[in-house]
Image (cartoon, rainbow, N blue to C red; front, top):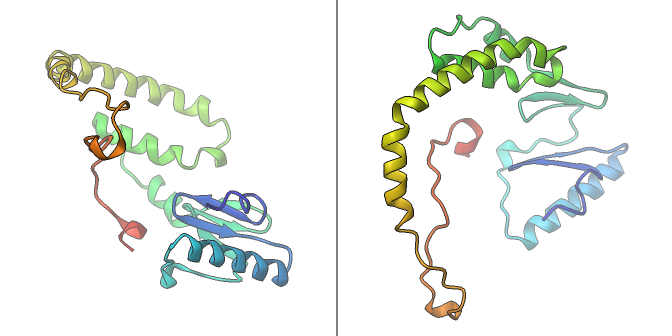
Length: 175
């Protein structure tokens, strides 16, 4: 919905918008266009999450200003203080957390390679344990996929979800 504004004063990541401009007039014009689009698409904005005319903003887990993107110091400190992983799931969590900061880490790929090799071994061992049961279960499930209904008119088709995704909302997702 914001494709005309994208990279022309607006950055979008999932449900986070970041507007930027060289002047107050430009920012006001961008804000007006964004609000018109939101109204036309019946998109409601959460006022407590909206901030305007900031010199620096927290966006997508980074601090953004006119000149640079930088990491949030508290996140860096928390990551640096994590204990060494003692199990595969802890290692995966650490790798994913560090990956979020990869653009700020010199020689990131070189430094992470040994950890990724260990993670791959852990993954392969875990997969070996469950793959037989998993593939039997998946084989049973895929036989239940409904027949394509493309040749039916819309009203007589059996509508169903395309896929399922589970998880819990956290942080900003709760608003």
